[in-house]
Image 1 (cartoon, one colour):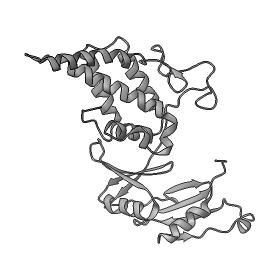
Image 2: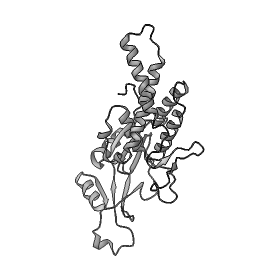
Image 3: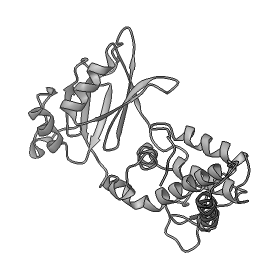
Length: 279
């Protein structure tokens, strides 16, 4: 059972903590490789994967993480294994002056358990193996490619649209209550902001004395596989619709894509357009 307090939002701070412990010594030779391997795998995944990892480290059972985290459960287990290992090593560094028999037995048991943690260090995970000579984990021969094409991990994982708001909190409440987003307040970042997440859409709200309207028609375009469902959801939530969604038959004669436009509480016009990709 993990006993330390871990960062809740920034996984880079977590890896810095791990690296600091490893540099103090007393760990296996491939412990640093394990940290590097896990770090690179998380760097290849969407931000939600890191958020769920920090949830797991702070007490949420892996089995209770959201469904979209299930496919990478082995990665969370490896991260917890490394965290538990480093906590034990840190504990063993402290030598009691007059240890009791119970304390001696407990320390022996803890030391014996370290080898179990070390067995998986730098071993293949999620179809990839660790190679200290490359910047990316290498695909295990015979495994399905993780990404289309050459099987390499992506260096660019996700993007976030930045909205400047005179009152980010008010805007966050609107997006949560009316648009179904989940808000996370990140005051420990270099640029404090509120991160809004829904499905594959990420929006960062930052505070600004004035809101500068975009000179173009829309400030954000959201591609949806079925805009009709989202249209009715937003309309029932009382969201202001600027451009109505035409029915499928009528839109066949249109030159533009099937879409609708809504307005948020700050007056931003956001377009929801029919996705041309098959999901």
